[in-house]
Image 1 (cartoon, rainbow, N blue to C red):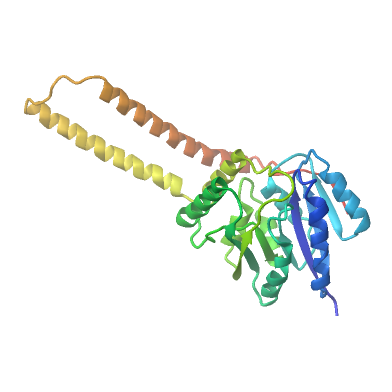
Image 2 (cartoon, helix red, strand yellow; image 1 turned 90 degrees about the vertical axis):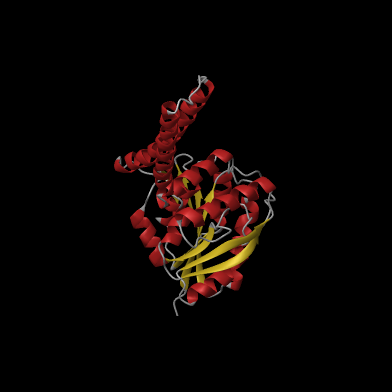
Length: 309
């Protein structure tokens, strides 16, 4: 009987301290999932440390390891998209290289996949992280569920197992400036969620900077929600109504002789407020327009520099 193949896709960026611990943990899965062939796809996302060399050293001792080297740092979402073009498994697991997500959970995820679930998400019930990290993440996922994708997991996810069919669909979509996890969820296939507690990072320092978090936030909402545009429309109506009421009040006061000498403070404050609102609205429109332009250029979202098979 032919074994099914399980591919595990891992984006790597400045993970030289994690790799010596991550690869053995992943390799141990073959002892419990004996009915599966394994394939490990590591995508080096332009790391400037020793990550690539460590991956190649481990590859010499394990032919199941495949290393994809990108030409520069494109971000984890693009690294995952790149890796999806090289996986060959019947199902594919996606996990970070920092071991904050327990690889052993793949065993339960595989069982759900065998029952017909094409998307199995490990959702964060809690996280052993700083208060600021929790606040940002919880706010982000609340807004995603409220204004972008209904039913989105409360704690979010980036640890997931997907069917081969989902892989092919993602490859055909191939969007830039998007959140691959939100894209997976939005496909609407039979899904299962497995709650877990995200662990604290033990080795190295995260390169998931505030600016990258903001970009993901903007990408997610521009890609999956019209709420920002609808917000601008609503604000425009509110300002127009308030302006009309204020103008009507001023006219009535003038006709009744109750208008006194007005200072400049109120006028300057109103002008500044309205100009600020206009600039914010132009910025939101610009985010949408930039992404439209970026897609129409047909430039690649990433460039694969070298493949080590």
